[in-house]
Amino acid sequence: MKNLFLLFAALLLIIVGFVALPQTASAQCPSGWNGPLTTNITVPTTPPCTITIEYCWFLSPGGILFTNVTGYSFFDPNCFIAFFINPLRDDIILTSLLNQLNGLYPTLIPPCGSYSAMTFTLERAVCKYIENDSAKQVMYVKNCTETGVCRSTWSVCIDYSEVNPKIVRTFIGKTLDGSSECPDEFPIIPLNPPDGWKSPCFMDKCQ
Image (cartoon, rainbow, N blue to C red; front, side, top):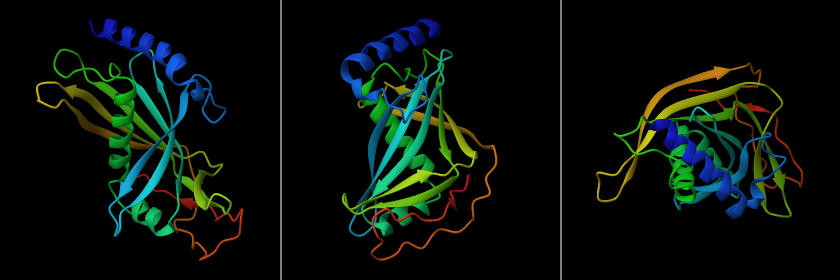
């Protein structure tokens, strides 16, 4: 029964991907992955500010949902710093990605109870740099060339017993794959950086 559900979900994703999201065929995502997609996260500063996350995603034949954060963008450096130092940021990213994917593909996440929960993996590079785009008045956080990847894994399902169905997730674990020699020091962002300014690579810890 679970295999039939996963097969139906995979077929529906292929159909919807071609009809509703033709822009997902992008060189920014590995071959066979979907995306990139973007989702906004509100950071509870005063006043609140917004970080945009870009990511790719892939549903494996075994029913594991992989997501890979390819970058961030922001207007206010203080906003990104507040987000970056939050120890729960992976959980915050997870919530945003799950809500968006569930909205786009309602059959993607299985219901709790009748089916086994889906395994959800969030990947992000642990070595990043910041680049300024003066024309768009935005800064981008991009991945450096080091191979270190932080992988966080949850099991997820949807509880339909509630009046308003909700996504239920259980943390499984977090691992660091590969290696990285990035400095463990957040870069100083100039007050008015020139167009094209890039920071040194810095560590986004897997913790």
